[in-house]
Length: 260
Image (cartoon, rainbow, N blue to C red; front, side, top):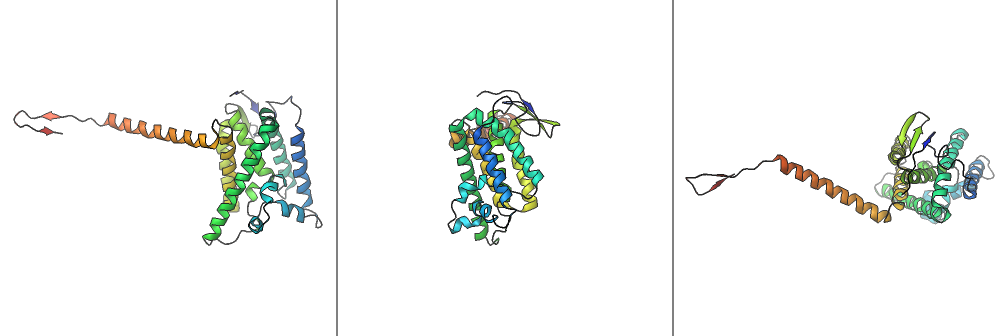
């Protein structure tokens, strides 16, 4: 796998790798869809449209299309933060798209987004079964729209260019591979504020599915590799304990027995 050292800005790949490449039309279409649906929510006559397309508990009532449409519906109320998230999505999305190509990029997004939605809905159903109450209006907010696409593209970038150096917030140099864990950390902080457990689980699932899809053997190969590493770690610990424990057999010349 090709790895190139890249120094970039606010967690984005656009300042370094692929900076001279044209912007993919697919990415332009995604950004336009996110911006358009984000704008619709501010008008009384059109606010119902993004509500019908975002992921919600209505999936259990037959609104199954939301599992597919929710990544392309802009989320948020602050225009500044929304545009900043679109900018970061542009940085990462452009590099990942040109590295994978259309035939690999879209299956990655589809599998990770649908898989994340399935995990989030399962968590919500378990919460309801456990008597945690019904989901409020903030359910899935951590993974709506551009946020799930950010999780997928950043995880893909971190997997494809793990040794790249990214200047987080333009200051702190971080290896790209650490963004896999930083995504989970940021999502957890968001969970602490929003109590959106289903959304947090969805982000974690998206990161794992994106990472595993780009590994040899896919998710099965990733789990198998982790199991092998865990077994090797346990074996090393056992060998170290055996080395530390010194056992001597002492033979008593007057008695035909062993003393341990």
